[in-house]
Image (cartoon, rainbow, N blue to C red; front, side, top):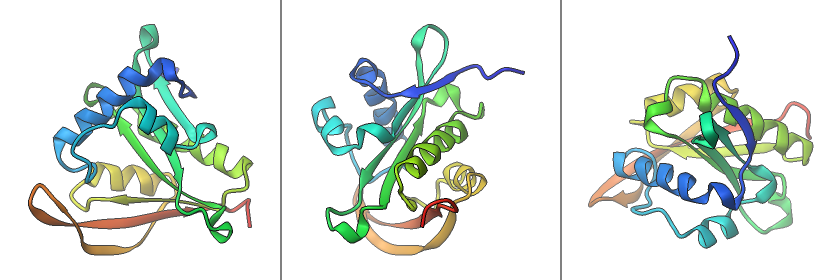
Length: 166
């Protein structure tokens, strides 16, 4: 069976849909410490253009997105990025997140990046599972790392180390 979507680089043409999916994830409560999606200009400036993708369904509908950011401007961390992946609630369970993670792994390895990491709330079991299937491993748990809606939250630190780079 052919995929119901295609993965393509994210552009400004996708901005409105990407930010709407981001906001939906924020409102669900277990995706991020953020409380509101930023304006496109802020989102665009803080993510690496060569490492961000969307999954497009019928009529160009964005079903999900993934984007990576540098973790540091120190040269020793040049091969380490942190990513976020979000899928529209109506598109979950269709392989969108896995396909987006695969695209990110290919692009980062081509660019010489050796570590892709992410922090995930431990309650977000679906995200933890899709990351494990994509070759990520749990590095540790950051306890009470930040406050979210008035309560302390933990995150699970995940990483995928390239077998091709390094």
